[in-house]
Image 1 (cartoon, rainbow, N blue to C red):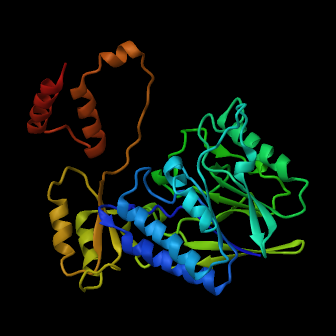
Image 2 (cartoon, rainbow, N blue to C red; image 1 turned 90 degrees about the horizontal axis):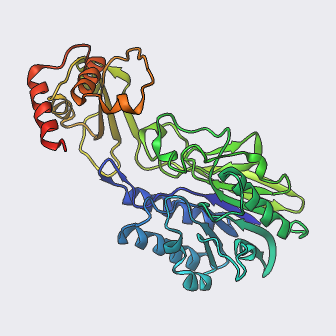
Image 3 (cartoon, rainbow, N blue to C red; image 1 turned 180 degrees about the vertical axis):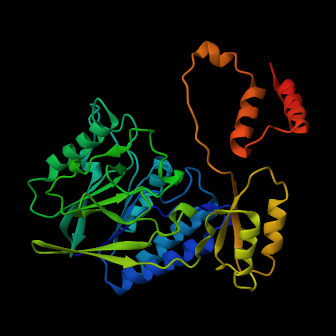
Length: 398
């Protein structure tokens, strides 16, 4: 039995105001070809199908069209989808009556029985081969408070949920595949990437020990870097097919192919090359003159849908309102798309002190602004800027 594990498509994402529709269509076309060429039996999508809980109609159209086309081209294919923290669980499940006719199972909502217990059977999905169950999939969507069994913490609740489902299938002879959308302890997160840090602050890190050693494979979503967890080859994040930020520009995109044979499992990473590259100039912030020299070395040409997205990082010692003008002028006739312009000042040592709430209420906003300006630019705020800021504070003050 062959299974492809993928996740974190984030359909509808706008990359610094650039529409990524064509990039997503490129990936979905590639994925369809992989499923067909490799004769895949099941496709597992571990959450974050969409970038927003209220996706645009165009994003939904892309998703549903993909599902129709792939199930038409490969009628034997079974698809299991779980909701991620970016998805609306109810919206994702809404077409289930139609999906069932297409051999597609979507799990977003954790249902309860009439007596209030978790409906375990709803989350246990048989994976068929030749009309017989060949494996059991524990399709656990992103869990919100109230979705899991009573517990003292979020991590404990997630652990109890997987343990509860395992109890229902542990006596069955077929392989057990677990799916989840969460962050595990020890996983690698891209530096300065906030897109991966949006699950319940401080509570999202789950030990990989919650996944039983008897699970044949655990298909995870949420983190965008393809990786195995805690040196367990069969507990993996497939990673996102497209880099979601410049912090992810060095990630290697892929999907994971799992081949189940009798008493054996083979796991293979299938690399995917996104159609658009991400570039940062320079690697570390430099003064404007040096940055402009680096830009001058970029290849010339016209801008197209496959032109790289560019991040420009400039080291400044004082405010420079003309930065964007200088950069955009230098980029004229260059075959890149400016996505992000970052102005950074030299780092200085900070000292922090604790204050009471009463003292906090006495702080003058002008003093805070002046202190931040001096730390950032190494000099006192100009009088003109002080006067302008003071007038704004007076205008909005209660």
